[in-house]
Length: 203
Image (cartoon, rainbow, N blue to C red):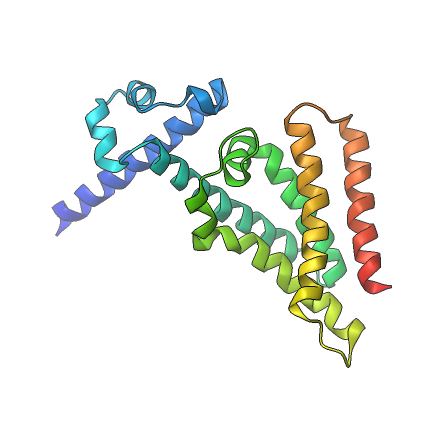
């Protein structure tokens, strides 16, 4: 049993090494630089060994996408936990979303198809729903007492969520293709947008 556990542990380490090497290559040369041969060279393995873990480059992109959504969800949960009021939670979560996008730029690009092709399969993975679900629940918590006795419909919640996401993702995308302004201006636009949408909910 100990030997079997060791083998499984080594396999998981190799798998993680492949993903880490892939991300390193992308950070140094962009997504176009990524290839199975370069990954093999980076970790000093032969290419056939890489294929034992991932059938092709698309499979690696999919796994990096999954990793990105899990990391983003973790950051959003941490941001939410620092506040009690839903309005403050929303503000903190969207700021955490922004910070993640630039701290993990390459992951964000593959997660949302910014300057790289977005894998269609990624849209179907359960992990891709985690960030939206976390923010969605806080929007519901904010809207429900304000709209009582009316219960907010899914469409009403959806409009608020996508208003937030469209503005913030749009601003992130603009900056990722080097068409943004200064950091100070970006943060002012970001905070103005977030507070404005929150006010549209709270009245």
